[in-house]
Amino acid sequence: MARLPHRLQRLLQHRCDIYRREPLAAVSGSIEAQDAAYTVTPVATGVLTYWQATPELDEPSLQGITKTVNLVTSDKWHFLSSQELADGWLIVNKIILPDGSRHHDYGAVSVIQGNPTSNTSMVGRDTQSQWVFAKRSPEILIPGA
Image 1 (cartoon, rainbow, N blue to C red):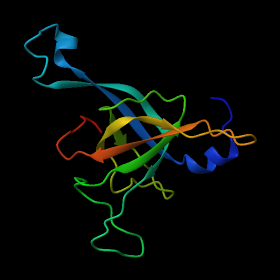
Image 2: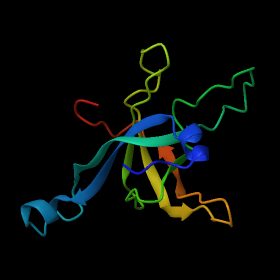
Image 3: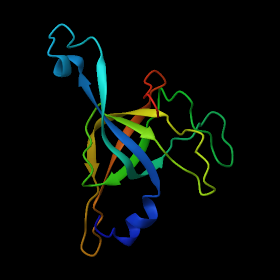
Image 4: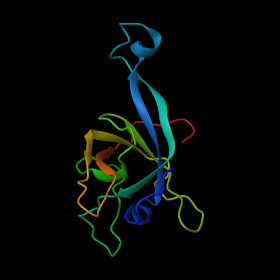
């Protein structure tokens, strides 16, 4: 991988896996299965990211609380601009804490809401990054995540 700009080296400290959602009909060839269910195919694993969680505003604390079921708010995920992302794809949290333990949301699945937005590059500031909003999904489980 090419050397990241210093700003991105400091920002992209988390890891996640990206999954594409495909209708079963695309896999099995069955038209009847078009809307029945989805199969999940990994696109990339161990992707560099920065997860900007939306805090629980009803119960403020010094650190904030991440919503277990994120029905109203969306978290913001930052990626390199070269990372392929699309609406409806899945992000699986794979954050490992500095002490080597798993983050309490490790394995949580979020669904991307809308297409990615690229950060603007200016003279002397090559951002090479993009971001998406994603909502937590308690119903979707990834085997082995």
